[in-house]
Image (cartoon, rainbow, N blue to C red; front, side, top):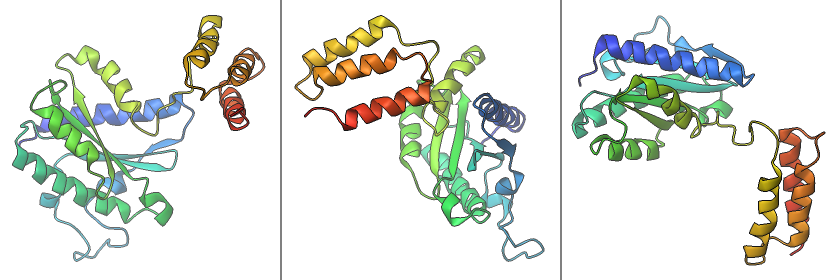
Length: 232
C-alpha cells in the first residue's frame, strides 16, 4: 500500500489545521485528539494484549474533536487499486475501533472519518466510484472522502465542498439579508406548486423574512412554525 510519507503527512496536518480553524470560525470547541489516533485501546496502557499492531492501522492518521464529535483523519493510498484501497479501509476501521474505545455510548454513533484523496483525484474516473463506495460504508464510523484537485489553489473550494457534507455544514448561515426578489419568488413558487403551499403560508414566509429584528436562527424557527400551522 503506497502512501507517500512526507506529502501525506503535510496533507494530514493541513486538513487537521483547516478543521480546527473552521470550528473556531463557527464558534465551536475544537482540539487535537491524539489518543483516538493511537494503537492502544482505552484502559490498555501497559497491556500488550489490548493493543493493536501498527501494521494493522493506517500509516498516517490524526484525530480531532469538534463540538463533542470525534473525527479520525487519514490519507488514501496514491494508487486507486481495489485491493490497496480495501486493505487501507480495513486498517481505517481498525483505527476507528480503537477510537470508539475512548468514547461514551452516546458518542460512538457520531464517530466520523475524513479520508484525503491524492492530488488530482478529483474528477478521476478511477477515484470517483471508489470515493462513492467509501462514503456509503458506514461500518464502525461514518466516512467522508475529499478528492482533491490537481491545482492546490483550488483546495479552499474543495474543503468547502467537503464541509457541506458534514455536521459542520451551516446551510442556514447566509451573508446579508433576504432580498425582496428572493422573497417575492416564494409567491411564484406557491402559485406554481400543486397546492402543497398556500398563498397565505407564502405570505407568512415573506413577512417573516422582512422582520429585521430576527436573526438567521430565529427566521428558521419562525418558518418551521409557519409550515406546521399551514393551511392544508
